[in-house]
Amino acid sequence: MVIRLASMKDIRALFRDKPDVTRGQIDALFEKHGFSSSRSIKRLETNFTNQVFLVETRAHGRVILKIQFRRSLGFSLKTEFAATRALRGIASVPVSESLVYGGDREPLAFECLLIPGEPGESGLSYYLGASRSQRLQLGVLLGKTVAHIHSQQCPDELQSQTERDLTSWEETIQEAMFGDEVLVSSMVATLPELWGRLLVATDPAPEVRVHGDNVFLWGEAGLHNVLVENGNALRISNAHDFQSAGWGTAAHDLLQAEGEYVVKPGSEHFEPGYVDAFRSSYEAVIEKSLMELSPVEEKVLSIVANLRGIRFFWDCGRLLHPKTPEFLGAAVSDLESLHGVG
Image (cartoon, rainbow, N blue to C red; front, side):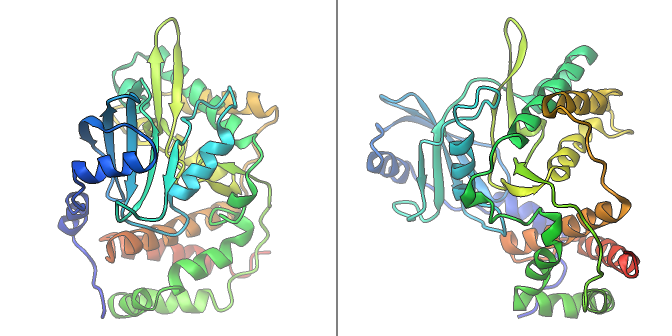
């Protein structure tokens, strides 16, 4: 079977195509793990890999049920469970305690996680309605939070999650692009010229030098994954979504946190000084200046991001994203330019 390029209609359908989860199944899961039955259940908006429910229980308060029904490389609730367990108790990193990880797929047919329902407003939503000073303050708080996560010891069980380790970039792209036979045949049929260039550029891969200063990565750093409260003072009350946590270069988290559309020049929400506020607070916590990536390392980072992006949509929807030619073309060009660079 060969899969062709999808349309944006196909991508939008991923958000609608979610399995049915009944109240009876949720109550059975809660009973299995010693929680009281539901008083009410509300499905929350989320991406096309998870379903998230806010459950008001009869005796245990508000609980978030997170169900992952689509899987991809380096992306799982088991990873989130391990990461939050390691970070729990670190005063400078406000994470929820993961109450229960369920990987046996009973009574739900998918991997799931139970976490407390935390108070607070989405950091991204808060940013959109905030004043300039509040936005900059939020950048400071996010920078500190990311830095404190990076300063923690990465659990042994997550140090095998090296998809964002620049020193393992060759293995990462081999697994992402050549680890699925149907993906390979689909790429050959759909983008033969670019695929041929990829084969030439990776056989062998260019020999380049990258540094190996890895940290405990959040994986999904950004305002969209924090809750904030503004009582006596603005604060981040919760950091969440650690499904992509692991071991790798800090630049993955930093570029993600800085690259949200709210801080891009040209965006109606662009706030000059936000990135400086974020970086200054990050550096103050780690007590050293950020090591800038070399041009070679920036290209390696881009190659990994583009090829993993192709694999992510493939794993989650068995489709080739409409921007696959763009992703693959950029990666191939970067790979070609790295040959002969020491």
